[in-house]
Image 1 (cartoon, rainbow, N blue to C red):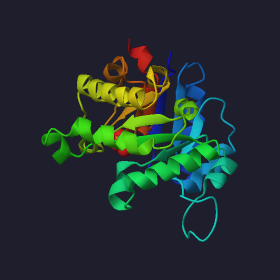
Image 2: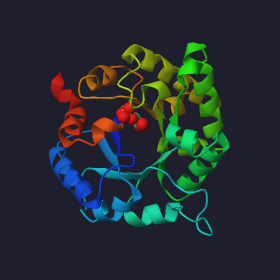
Image 3: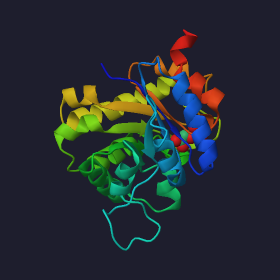
Length: 251
Ligand code: PGA
């Protein structure tokens, strides 16, 4: 049985005090939940939210460097993330691939480095609108998944979370239909089965991301292949994100 995981990706939003305020209130509201709740604040807020010693909410970073230490001006190493209290790190978000030139090879490198330091990667993959229109969705996600998992050992697979995020659905208000997201995620899971084995595929958690809101989370989570969500815009608002993580209450 895969434990659902809902993560908030705050992107480049929130000051330290705003981050602390949201995390305090969120942690209070999720104590009784039997799912994993993660928030990924900007780097500047990590120490402050870690100092809250939250009981339930886990912390993730939005990116990690390709090296442990050294002359990499402006970068943050996995050791520094562990030194705060990060247990997760988002790797290969489409915004990083698009604006910061992150290739599949870089994504793979970062996954290896994160795992080596005990950070659980949330690996983002997904197709663009043009790729979807050209009928290439499945081919794109299969190739991204294969590249991401290159040389990753079988026993590390359960440490990794995949986020299927169709790029055209990110921040646009457009969501893949729950059935459609389920189908693509099923394809990603089959890819993991092919690379490793069925047990690995059954263990790995795969989220959907792209305009997830209180109004569509329940339908998404009802799909058998969807194990959680990576939430951008709607995770910035306490009321909205609380409603999302409490999706079972809607039943
Ligand atoms: P969104 O972003 O929920 O605002 O669409 C999702 C993401 O980029 O992870």
